[in-house]
Length: 382
Image 1 (spheres, rainbow, N blue to C red):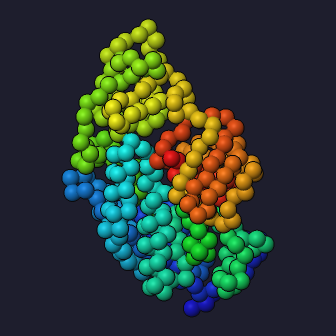
Image 2 (cartoon, rainbow, N blue to C red):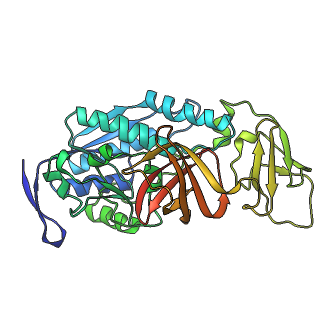
Image 3 (tube, one colour):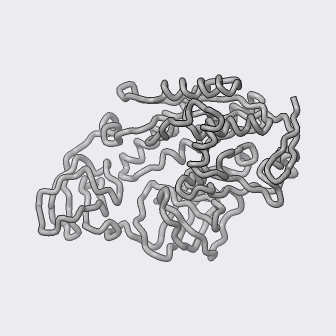
């Protein structure tokens, strides 16, 4: 069935394109599905099942039930895609391995790469979908085209897509999408990227969606809240170790250096009390000696650097230019930092970045480059 739709600014669109929407059971993906159906797309809701440890209380069953209720409410087909094996292999096993090496991984970026924009996208296209859609707060732009106009032209004729930050600066999720390439962007819709979270909640209420008042999920991608110390204790042996100050003196104890992230201020015990009662932050760790180093100022330590090397680089479009100034983000919701690309090796997928002001560099985390609001891609901090 084809429908002529009246869009914003008087734009009329005629389409009967199929979109598989990843329904997580939350309000963001629910509104995405509702907006797309209202826009005239042939929408199918898809819940993605992933692996979860048998000993952990997981919300996945409740999430699937919620997603199914949304599909029924919107009167759209509902399907379930089991990617549990892929999730365990590509996300969980990798995360455990990275933690064991003393680094702090970014599982959400891996989840987007292997689950949503590989496994889900490939399956959806094979099942006849023209696009997939998710509830990410991010945008896709095409030169001289509105967001929806790319639906009318063959993929080969489309200008290169660009990945942009979401309009809601507080919820922008482009940081986790740096692994996406142009092929994936050409097949992807982010319906709520141009809205703020309060606006999405309001839209959900307007549609009467059953998820309008549901709380946002937090924690590991798909699984929800996870006590990482408890989780890792099932896979990595923990050994008690020393907490050191910047002078190398033992001032406390901890349960395993691999459990800590640079900048963390909890989880260790200080036995040597000082007149200064201000909090301690982890500013360094050594897996070989099972020690962590702490200081009262989180930015003071061996991990505060101006030159950062990243590996496993992935660029959304054109490779950034050496010698050009961009902005870098090394943590979610971190204020962008002015930087310059000093070297790029496309063959070995590495790059060297110099930041204007030294920052706390966390091995294993994602460093993402931006040109204003345009996400260029990024890599993993070495």
